[in-house]
Image 1: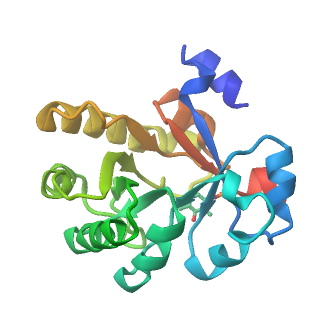
Image 2: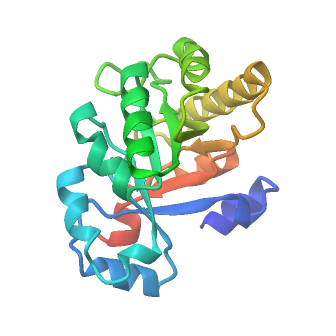
Length: 214
Ligand SMILES: *Cc1c(COP(=O)(O)O)cnc(C)c1O
């Protein structure tokens, strides 16, 4: 399905990475997913992630933290995760930076943007994205890589397209304004809407239910 969406939009399948979201499964799923060729895993809660990180083979995978992150959990997440998709404040970015220095790591960071403006969604408003990217750009221990969003839940998949398109435009604008060629990543698309996200430029898709079974 990813390959078909890439073909429709003239993109190379290598340009889109699949993050398997493991929040609903136990540690035994980790070796099975690795066996099936999934190399990147996404978790939205530290409490759940810590069990999976001890599964056989977990150390071979790339780990993405995709959920809301409280500053007091940053020390655990920074130590074990390669990517954090959900940075939504300068204070959190500063804490990630502090912990990354402490553990001698560099964390790949995305800013989460609430493009659809729904009150229940986390993330910052689109107009605050570039200012926050500017403020975090010089923090040591983190590499700013791009933007993440969650689409509104809807029966009509075409309603999500403008949300993904807006995130793509925002990233292009940010790359230009900050002059940072490293800003290349768009984390968008889940089980229900990843084909549209791929057509709109997603580089990281976060797929749970479809991959894990329900
Ligand atoms: C659960 C979750 C996903 C995966 O959702 P599915 O609909 O199961 O594919 C993606 N991103 C985030 C932030 C999630 O919490």
